[in-house]
Length: 585
Image 1 (cartoon, helix red, strand yellow):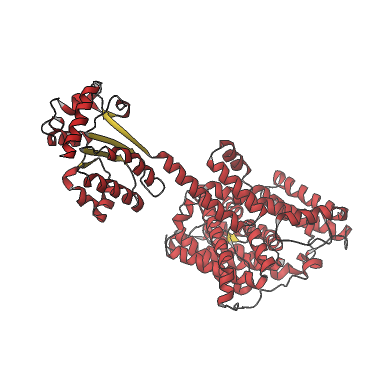
Image 2: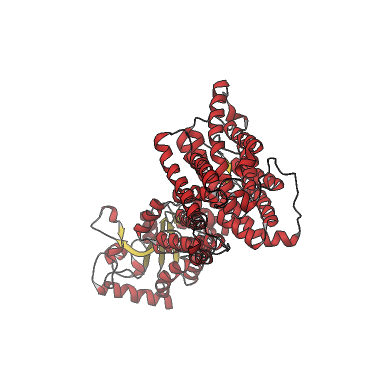
């Protein structure tokens, strides 16, 4: 999707729609931007700077017509951990590095790969983030004093419990009032954001009735400046880059996931289609530029994007206008923002956490009681009790291992023989038993992918057959959709072992992709082009004609068809004796 295409057919009416939606989303974004910044361990104005700069750049360079970008709740745990461990300056550098990674993802066209991250992993860490955000606001909601913030969940919970006796009635009343207004407002006024109404009214009441008794943005972080900060390029050293590589990668991956999920939601609401690689490039540009002006990492915000669409947005111009609205409010009303109580902002973040918790999807996956349920629970627990980096890494590795196990379990290698009672004497596994088998022609049906996870299982399944040195080994590979190099190596060992002892190897029904692998490695030529057949019946006829016109190695009995359809062990013993005699000769 070209940049100009997003403004195709743009007119005055569309601009009016964008102005309305941009104004509404801009007003909503102000309290959220400050709240997310505070929860991330930085000053509230940094959230506003991010909303202005990143929000504008994402709309300008992104791949979605309706995407609204800015600071989001999903980033809170990882950003807070970076601030606690490295400091605010290193957070800016990590954000810049993440931006470069996002641009590279887009340039390398990796946007489509994000969808392959298992759903249980994304639900698990999203629910874990929601728990961290919600519990992280308990201290502000209750107005607890002398609280020290820690990097880990248990230490923060211990702080809340130990200082519970310092609960402030004024903060609690302010928080409850803000929460009640936020919940009630949408029932009466749909077009006005409840979070803004709750924040303003509770702040006004606290200012006039609880002045000096409730912690505010000004008393905790100082006055909010009414201008954007100056340009500052961070100091880049090899040591700083190395230590921030892992946090930056997590920011990039999480930002990519959140932005593309938001773009997909926008597509579903508008029946449009975003360009995932262009969206990653836009997100990357925003995260490269924003830290240069003091802003924190940003990504696509699902709730604000949905609000943008519901408000009638017609193009990316609404996102640009939303950034300009926030800038205008910053310039005109910044001094008043310093009087906002932290208790008024706590319910906003708690509701954000509740809405992003994916509780229904969490319960749905958990109820299934599958391996995905295990991945979900482990990712969730690790997100809450360790950190997001560990949770994502372990969740992905566990999901891959369980997937490999499922694929291994799906491989079936079965010995088969023709069933005379069926049309065309279709080969079936139930025809093979200790009393009913053909020692000269062994036929195996292989179903499932042959790859590194199950290649050894395939090889071991045929080991016993090779010990008996059959005259012909027919492998039915019509249901092998995938063959990797490990699978090819095991197949090659089996084939070469069989051929070295005089066994003729035939293959039927092989699909184009596995066949291409065999051709590239030379195994196809080693087996011989004439030993590959489209259908099993053709391969059997070839084997029978090769064995002296339907006679099994020259024995007196009418071989394969009769031998496999009779339970007369004397015939099979005769075949076996003849085979032994021929082999020794």
